[in-house]
Image (cartoon, rainbow, N blue to C red; front, top):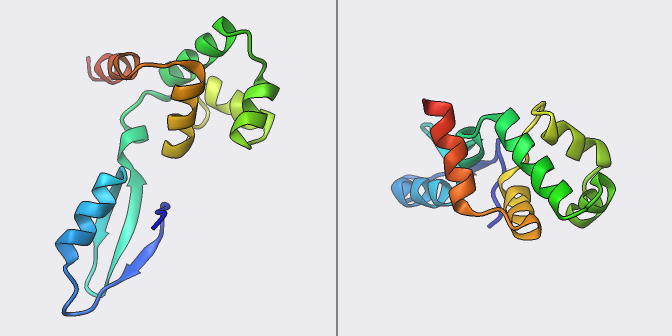
Length: 121
């Protein structure tokens, strides 16, 4: 099942709510448990990054590889303006886009971890 922010999963008395919550967390989202349903909350993984630092890293890696915004946008299936918004820190890419960006631009987990550490300092 592909999850997205705001999605509602209806529960019943015999439903294992904890299993659904674990599944939602494993996909990188915050589960919001209500009486009759579980709502898929904000993305945890992306939410921990400073948007400007993440944007700077994407732009740096894109330029190092000599890739234009348009080429990256075509590869990801988004508008060129979306890439611009990510690079200036106005918005952040969704988790599945970040995974594709990491692969395409050769961004390591270590580089992303540094962004989290810088934010909390």
